[in-house]
Image (cartoon, rainbow, N blue to C red; front, side):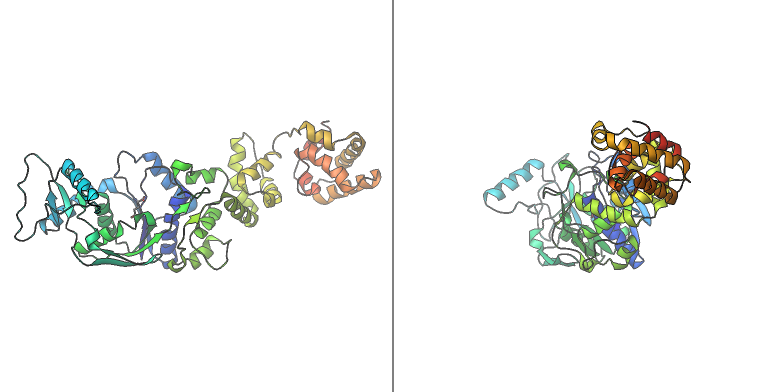
Length: 458
Ligand code: GLU
């Protein structure tokens, strides 16, 4: 069992693209097979190293590890030329000298006659056929002798049986006049050399598949199993693409999403296991199969991704979250310490990204400046004496959650205030907002002198 992901580095890889890596990876991992990474970089004008880097970084971040590769098509040109020469020797390809102008004229005649534009086989050698004289100084393309008659058929694991009449397929150009091989040919040579058993890819390649199958068979190799995944649409219902604003995969990492949550979200974007929405990577690998791939286009929904991320954050150990938050605090110039896991534990339930969690944690490592409106609304004249009394109690008590809770109760008893009347202003003074987890837990995670300082700041 061998699968592959074969991205073209012609733009920053987005979530829709990387789903085409997740499924073959999961299939290989769940079946004990191998997963191969191949970079299809033959479009020199549109390919870039920066795009390759985002592919490698994005896959590493999501934990989609490959067993072989990355192989780069540009480094395999000698191999493609070798197979071309072999095909030429076997009569599987032939040179075609038709000029671009003649091809255009042919296409126009066919369109005028309401026929499908296709190469007419002028240069295809047949027994007894006389070919036109070879024009001087013209370098030919090489065309593949597509079988004539019959159908090409495959049982697609997503789309079911697909049959295409060979009469629909003309003789594909597989090498340009300068001898460079073309896309469909390279894919087949690679899939053969890399012994790929299952091709799982986007359904924008369905039209290439019958052509590729014919090339496989001409080379004497049985084609792999194919599964063509439906498109991923963006929130506007268009095909997801960087042209209409799809973010690079790595941006989700930078925005504070957890790799396991993104894997969970992407897994569900075109595959299902009953009604299960939230699952771990291990469960996914246990459950994944090609039989439950969805047939209709899936639509990206960032709100749902955030929800999935929030669910994963709740069950992620505090120490692990702290590892995500620590570098973010350091980037803000702060110096987190061993309180950080407990701070993450206290706030993780109210955050849907680690960036939001880091914003909470930052309040424990730098001065907090409450907004004037919050102060005006909550820290009113009548509660000021109670705040002073609480500060005195806190100055004298032991510094742990239970003792702090007792100091708060004592202040409430002495002043006759209700909990929210005291807790809201204290929260505003200490963390800048009236919405925080329970006050004793928050205060216990701050050094006593910081709490006393913040309470006496107004
Ligand atoms: N390089 C192609 C792409 O990025 C994928 C080719 C394949 O999976 O066969 O769309």
